[in-house]
Image 1: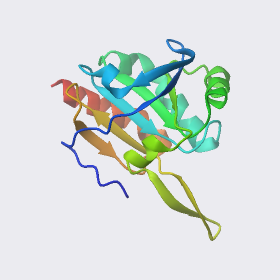
Image 2: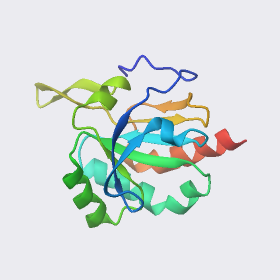
Image 3: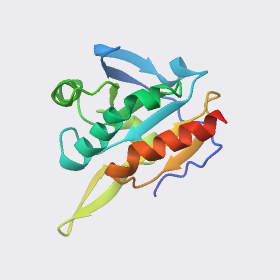
Length: 163
């Protein structure tokens, strides 16, 4: 993983637009707004693609259990707000998505990386998850997450954070 962030580091702050049930079609959000609660930031490459849909629907299906931990969870991609709105509506996602069109968050968290497909190199988001404790420190990092296992990993880490 290309991030230089480590467990115990202060989570990089950010300011962006949140989309979703409690945020409507776009509400400004800063990481500092969430101080005092655990936060899950899951970075994914692109709305409505097979792996990202599997990952998002896995979280949706475990949403009540994730909510029971008291943590805030956000999916983050470089897709624009309109794309997020469609993705949320199409799959009835109960959690908010953050739009990082300027790539400032993916870069701050070290997940904007060189990728390769069919021999072509390009820049893209590495599917990774960061769990931030209520004091704003990184409590867990899951690099190169497998979409189908993601929700289970998040729940386990959040429960450990509660203990």
